Length: 319
Image (cartoon, rainbow, N blue to C red; front, side, top):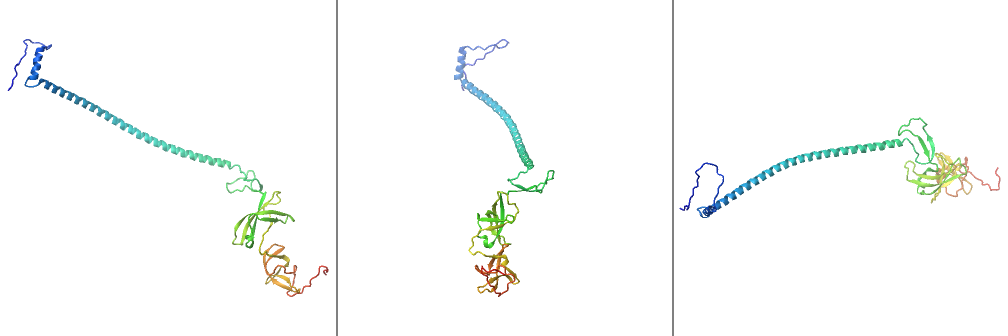
């Protein structure tokens, strides 16, 4: 068992407060020597103590920093929660404002539509004709009550060009085409003819009458023709088998049908049954029964079958 070479016990014989400790260099050397070469190393103990003290101080510092950071994190988290709540509130406010803006836009659009409607209604106060023409009917006077949609104010006709409608029979319908020349004759304008042309056709027959509606445009620059007049229309139609026309007074109406008095070569009268077509007033269309070139009596009167006709020469005077 090792023991120290020297053990020194220092004491004082007086009572009082210790003001200073003075160790000479020799004693320090001896103390260091004892620390270095003694049974234990005083320097190692001091170093271990210093390291332990540093670690404890470092741990306390780190712990203090961790606590500080933890407090800062909690504070930031609380601030973040507050900011998130504010953001949610602001988003809700923005959505509410957007809805309010959309509602106001709808109100503005409705107001604009109502304004346009009122402007249109205001424009209805003035009635304008769609074209230049002549007023043919006037149903109101100043101060009259006008009901929307049910009161006929005026009727205006444009008489520069008149439209005439003709029902063309089935046998002639296929020969009518647009631009075809036409001629109108009116009883109150004897000897005068009004030219026109086919403007359009229905391109279909009426099942009830078997006729095709044809529209004819008639220029009326001088205003001689009035709307509503009745006229006879003559359409120049080239037909492969044109009908035979006879004077209306040459037609005999008997109980067994229409007949004409045909004069045969020997001068004998033969009552021939015929099929008539259209009646033009002074002329009648013969569809079947006689051929072109047949001699008939223009005024048969009470002509009987087999009666003898004596022709007169052009120079012989009639009794």
